[in-house]
Length: 406
Image 1 (cartoon, rainbow, N blue to C red):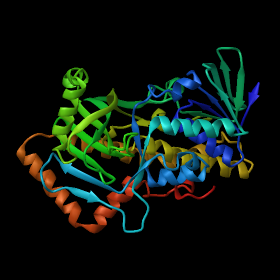
Image 2: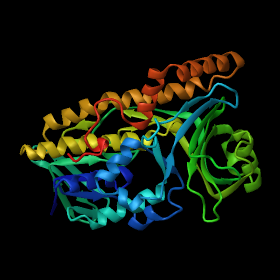
Image 3: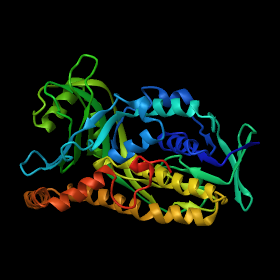
Image 4: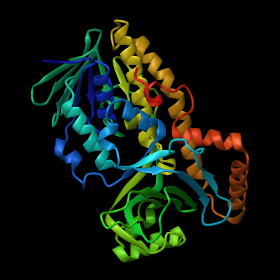
């Protein structure tokens, strides 16, 4: 029987980050995941890039992961939001001398840095590949019987398995779910002109088009990641375009401001959807990351929401351990539910509303949107509030997101 303070089902970015945060504060964990460990690190596993908000970056530094990522991410010095290529954009920039709005990292580099820290940790037991069989949660604790006959036990079980979380479904937690009529095409491109560390979110009626700054490639040319939401009916044709034709379409949507565009790697495509669990706790169970919520990538907040879950849950559990409490105690789980429930719901519906608002076609709708964007650009306090939301610095911030130990 393997015993720990916490059992984490799911060894992705969020699950590993939680284990590292707990280890940093003296608590042990067991990570159970059916995937082969090396499969998570393969460049072909995940071609996406992620905008790590400034608060999430502070947490990664606080738990000892930042050193392994130093110099591997591109600082985001500004975010420009446009309705198509029309005038009237909003430009978000940090005050002079302040930290960047975030950092752009390739997901494979995040995975490698987290894995390095997990392997080095003394209080993390990695059980991969391993598939959970019977799971029991009762007054005595949480027990997981693996398909290979091994057993694991802890006071608290964490579901970090992603959108189709088996433990969430087994717990009977209701979930609101719908699909967008969008597919995200993800690719890396090189271009003639510098992006100057600015991220662009261009809204077209058929879906948002994001240009995310990356570090230069090996050839020294400027690079950006493209996250392009296209109508599902057009997705197959777009995915099947030749490299030259796809680069041409990307350059056309950019409006040419970065010069000639060339694909600089493979392309990926992902179906887009929304889901939100009615609750994120149950008996001796807490949900984090995509097991609890999944949103449109319109504002790049998906993984950052998961990191906010990690910071809050880690703080609740560590403080409970210091008080000598049972880590699966309902009082601790209620605190986590109250801390994260409203924030995740508000972000989820804000991104959903933006997706629908900017998808309304027609000149009148575009004019209204541009009027609103112009007002945001002019009204300092409103603009500052939106920028704080993008940086993950609003609300009751857990200590880790402030860069402080628990």
